Image 1 (cartoon, rainbow, N blue to C red):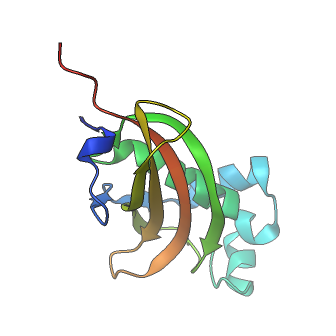
Image 2 (image 1 turned 60 degrees about the horizontal axis):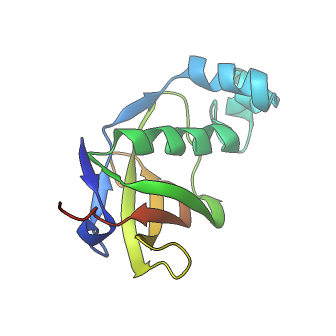
Length: 150
């Protein structure tokens, strides 16, 4: 796994995770524990809902996004997450759907308060194979600068 230090990050560069399939079993299991609305628990109820099928809940979608960050082809030398601008649920994530995470680096600057670090803007989207955006979130991470060569 390649590590991206602050100096390595290019604004507008993209990283893409492998494709994953969101199973009905995963949707139901997550919903049973965290968001037990009928349209997250039953195919029949999901089909009757505005989603038109068994749909993952927002917390599950955020968890998928978070997990897929660990499957990107390169990892930022993360020091800390700095929060973000919330999340946008753009289209339902339905049982059997294939999706991947795309991370785009939107901006960067040296940290004023943390020497040896930079602040990097990131945008995460989940997309299906047709390019439909299902989810988007924007935020900032604190990334370590490259250590000095001894």
